[in-house]
Image (cartoon, rainbow, N blue to C red; front, side):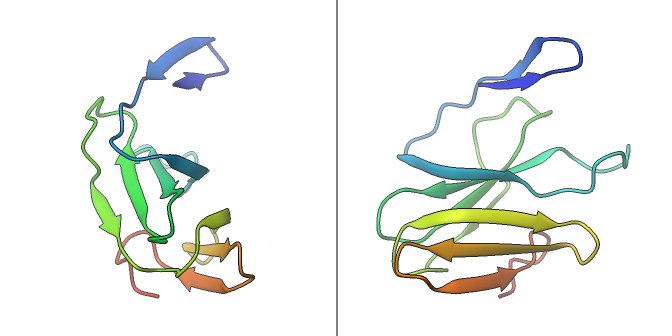
Length: 104
């Protein structure tokens, strides 16, 4: 469930077909033209990430990034200045990737 804390309203309840790991907002806040993108990692060893637009109300991911890591992702942080996500897995590997192009 994703809540808008300024209005205390639930924005969306995502139903996913995988075990979610960590989550991170991956868009520039305050840009009205952009979607509210939420990246959710897959808890299993696939090292995958799915990106959802929470404003659309759709349970289907907009993008899927597969095989980014060999181990479960335990941390993700978005750097909006460089439009880059930094993710780390349980073995200590760190990756940098773009939420727009999914290029590592």
